[in-house]
Length: 532
Image (cartoon, rainbow, N blue to C red; front, side, top):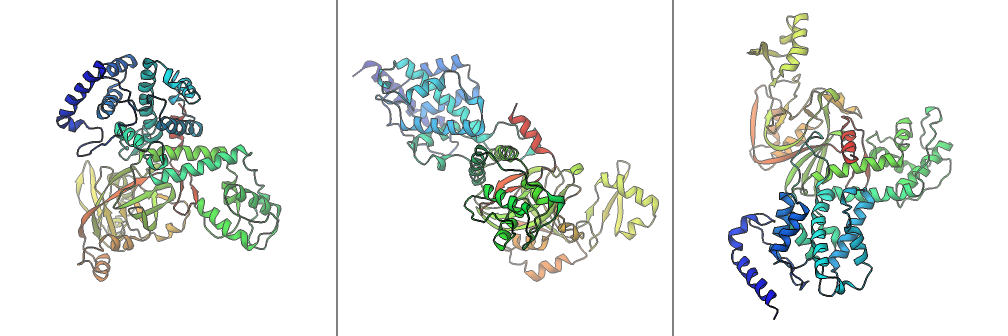
């Protein structure tokens, strides 16, 4: 037996005997066992070769640690080559990587020389004749490339915090993901990708829009004097709308006549729903304006939101609440199942609702409203100067002073700005959910109207759901607490994760592609970062 192989085997045995004390550095994290497929190759490298590559490449600490962890766990066997050729994993990875570059144009993944080498390996039968040192270099370059691909394709290129996104960014275990990739041996790679279901849905729609663009996109619809069209009407505009919907909605069948028939009505309502418009079936200027957005712009909007979706962790298994600011909706989930949704009002452009995550801990029935100092200074004090009875008329009282300003709160009651209940997930932004006496606001399509907190159209529905497992809180007791004149705090038995997000494009569980307006101009910042 080759003396070099015997010596290497002894070293590997010693390394394995020390593995227990190094468990805390396992790339999969504490308490995780990795069972890599080490049977696919009889080719080896050693730690000196690996350290030489790390030094030559001037690898950073993170990349160097990933490389060391990966090859140590697989006992320094090659991952991409066998004695007789290349592995199916190499073919699968290169296909995955090329599809990513073609779809997203990520030039950061174009490693000098490596692409030429891999393309050559995929088209030759002479891999066994390639010198070992050449294979070794390509092996290590490809593994290093995989880690860069992971970060770009699945963690995202932009810095979320710079984009005013304060939800903790998803962390990727590079070595652990590479081990799990290799274990699939080139099969079912889509199931392996470390992304949430929303990313997969939107990516599918992006590929569909790629085909639309290749086929010439869609024609602009004439607005025809801003007329509105209903079932029974006839116009060239109606034909153009039909053609536009045929191009965007896959699998539908509809005639292309001038007549607005009943078969068009459901499609028009679906289109209105996809843009967040009133679903009345009337073809008006607002719908046509959305339909006229060029396919190129819609693709860019999808790319921006795919980047945001990369930042998110996998969908939580338990119960959680997700708010989508541009959609003006709050969604309650139990795992992947949506339980219900509620219309909301979010912050004005001048008072953005912050994007962050926290845990809902308290429900406060019949709450006081502690008026923020900024509102006291800008709104309350000028009103008091105009009318000495302003506080009493508005059920308010002064409880002290701070920083040269009076401390004002509004007492519980029907006119209270927070309504009958609020939901607290303690955070430094002082943002929470609450009821409102201004119910008419929920009739508006665009509801960026608050000072930053989130107003709920159906707060009692949310309270009842959150307290369903606390038996003492019967429907009658909840209704009594909502109507009381005394503030009542309730602590939830289990905290509920809350994610306040910002997506202007997504595909829902029914397969409908949605677009919304960029009300805070966040999309522009992400787009700029992606194209730098």
